[in-house]
Every structure is written in structure tokens, then in C-alpha cells.
Length: 203
Image 1: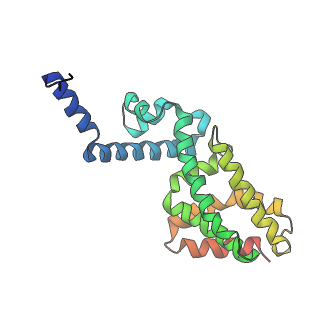
Image 2 (image 1 turned 120 degrees about the horizontal axis):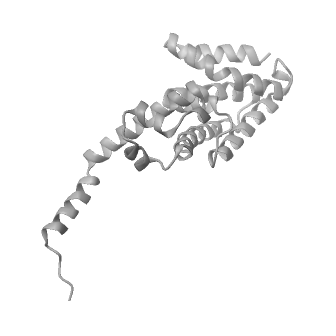
Image 3 (image 1 turned 180 degrees about the horizontal axis):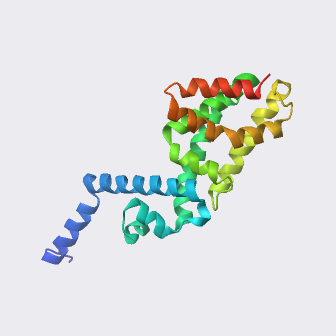
């Protein structure tokens, strides 16, 4: 017959396990995780993914290396979580575009970018500076890029360039820096961003 272990060591272990899963501890860990993500996004944007070491992220986030490793086993795991979140949000946003007429679908693409910037500016900036993410996020990047190209292909003769590939490259290279600059200078950045790129991309 099994009996419950009531020893002090067992009780302490149970208490530690309970503390580790308590709402307060979970909130503290989530704050730490967000600080790590924000610090790494800033470093990746400024210096590039390849130039940033895991130790640099720990220092920028002001956490011990052991703490950083308790969240992410390496730099690739960290950036994949960050970019998967960005591309999944982007794909959900583009689901709204499927049945829209071409001009409206381009406008909705612009709004999706604004939504991404409002919800995850750090992740969007990293996605811009790292167009070919390592690991699983690359598949999401490919799907998003293909969906964006298809929007411009449907727009066809409405495009100023009349070339979907040229329009895709132009938008990919200029959209995020323009969005960040507008967001830093005006609360009306969404309207200005949408109007600017509509006039830039469409006839």
C-alpha cells in the first residue's frame, strides 16, 4: 500500500513547484521574456542577426545567461519565435483580402502592415532587417511573400509600374522604414501611410 510522503524535503519540493507555476511568477517570467524579445529585436535591427551573440542579448536585456537559456536554447530559437508570431499575424490579416476587388486588396495589405506595427513593432522591424529567417519561420515568410505577390498580380494594370515583381520589391524595401518614420512623427500615421503608398503603387 502506497503512503503519502510527508517528509520536509517532499513538502519543500511541492512548495517550490507551486511557487514556480504561481500567477505572480508566470507574470514575472512573461515580463522577462518580453524584455528579452525587445532587447534582441533592437540588437538585430541595429547590427544584423549574424553579428549579435547570445551573450549580447543577455547583457542588453540585463538578465543572466542562465535565465536567457531557460527561455531559448539558442539565438535561432529566439528569432523563430519572434518571426513566427509576425508572419502568423500577417497571414491572418491577409485572409481578409481573398475576396476583395484588386484596388481594395492593396489598400487592405497596407492596413495589415499598420496592424502589425501597432501590435508588434519590434518583430516587424526584425522581419524587415532579416528577410530570410533561419529555421521554421522561413516557410511562413515564403507563404507571406507569395500571398503579397498574388495581391499585386491581381492588381495588374492598376499598378503604376504595371509589373507585379517590381511593385513587390519596391513595397518590400520601403514600406517598413516609411511606416516606422511616420509612426514616430504623427498619431495619424495609418492614414498617411495608406494614402502615400496607394498613390505610389497604384494609378
